[in-house]
Image 1 (cartoon, rainbow, N blue to C red):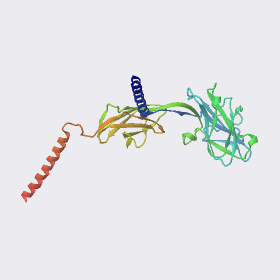
Image 2: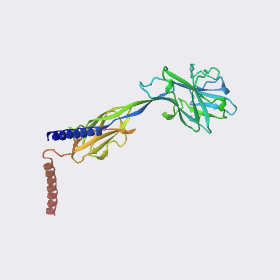
Image 3: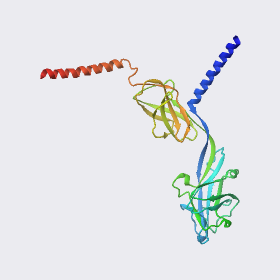
Image 4: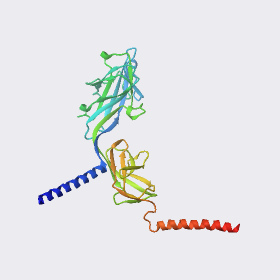
Length: 325
């Protein structure tokens, strides 16, 4: 019989611990996710056999391929590793090709020799190195080149994008330069992929807080990971009450909130969510909200007395005028 009781109490403790763990889990939703660092091309240009002594450093758009007269156009890009994270899972070069009217097969090769963006021409261009990849460009779009295996032992990388004679086609494509992009995604860039932990923890309000309607309070939180904007919401129990921020707000750890006059209750919670990833969020402790005036000594008597005084005043004026006439 004693053994049975022992098992019962151990089971009860286990259930309570499990419930406590589940409650704690529901407070925050931290995840491991891919994060990205983007490094704009350090330099870029192109060369053209039709204008062998001309330099095109600083132009908005580069060219690669062949013209209808057979002239050759080649584009060059260089990227430094100044933003390389300590631990990365992938490194890719991203280029936007546009003005593509037919399928073209581009070759991407390493450039091991130095070159200058504002003085390089067809006549002094560097020699081509090992082939990195082939890009089958079928339409205007952004294409990526995986260079993860080439990072070790380097602090920068240069490439040339061109069409080999064996893949000759009487056409060329434009490639957006570091000077010519409108949107960040279109820029020539090196994209580092790494794994981060993303988490949001709400600091205030806490379980000991009791906030009164029609007053201003500061919601506070901390976060981990690359979170730039957040949404803030009010919940009562499991039910959503209000979008505190209709639009996202900066993830600076603080938000001034003017509290409307809600029904009194001790089961309110604040939820803060990553504006770019709804899987990352944090809840505050349950806290109390009291209606304006609720709990103020003599408040109800004061309100009733004021109403009675107002009513007596109105009736007095009414009867006074009746007597006068």
